[in-house]
Image (cartoon, rainbow, N blue to C red; front, side, top):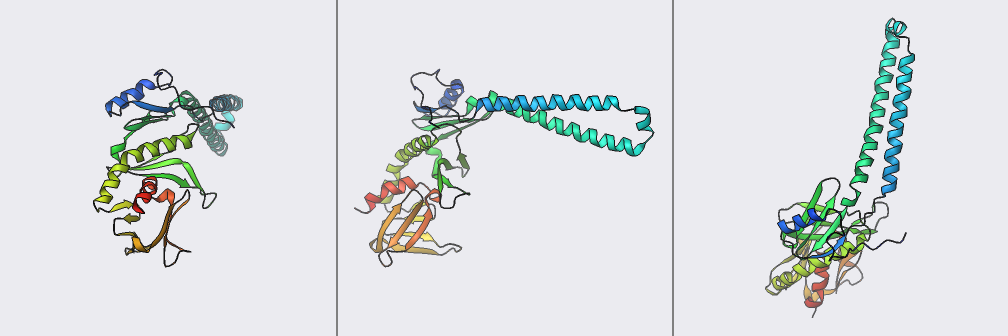
Amino acid sequence: MKSQQDTQNIDNELSSPYYAEVQRLATAYTLGERCSSYTQSTINGARLLINAIVWFAISIIGLFFLADAVRKIILSQTLADPPTLRSIGAIGVISLILLLGCLLQGWRNLREYSYRHREQVHVFEDGFVFLEGRQQSHVLRWDNIESLMRGSLNSKHPDHVINDTLSFITDKDVLLVLEPKVQQRTELCDTIERAYTNYRYPGMLELYRLGEDLEFGDLIINQEEISHVRANSEEEEQLPWDEIESIEVGETYTRVYSKDDPDHAWFEELTADVDNALILKELLPIIFQ
């Protein structure tokens, strides 16, 4: 299905529902000017509304039949027969629980329908605001993010990475996962990853030139060598730069090849598990000059 354009006219503050809340959060966290907004939710409002009506109808019809059945029970005979009374009571309780579940499901669908427009992300100069669900909101500044990981492994298709999710580790060592329910999710993830990379890249490059270690998850680089911790071990394996054949940061895998064995990767990791993979990718041309 062809998606509609997500990015709203950033000059029109009324173009997005809940914008007053977004602007309040952006001001509180000093995020600067708004750059782009993604507000077209992928949540199917019509389906949620129909589901709510169906569940409410089931609850009402079920309650009617239950009440009618109770009305037809001959109370004097039932009270005189304890086994029958227990059976009828058990059936009644189970029926009420099932009807209550149907009612709650209808209410849940109706609530999701009411808040479907809250699923939105706004990118600012110094961070972004993510609204979701009934009340939840998240704000991240670029300088509060220690690392960003793009994508996740598709459990149904091994070696296939889903690229429309982002994972962040904050400076307080908190893991946040962004799985937006908006159209053009890949474009949104591109926008956030690029903005964060533009913020972090100059500082990372300066640290490299000063001889500091740069950590990209399990991969560590400096001016002398590249190293990583061996799997299922605490031992670190090093490879000097003059022994490196190539490094590739691909869409699915990040690999390092040595000159001694250029046909087999000395290091291999899913790019989705490499911290700040885009920064690493953009540093490589400088390193190999």
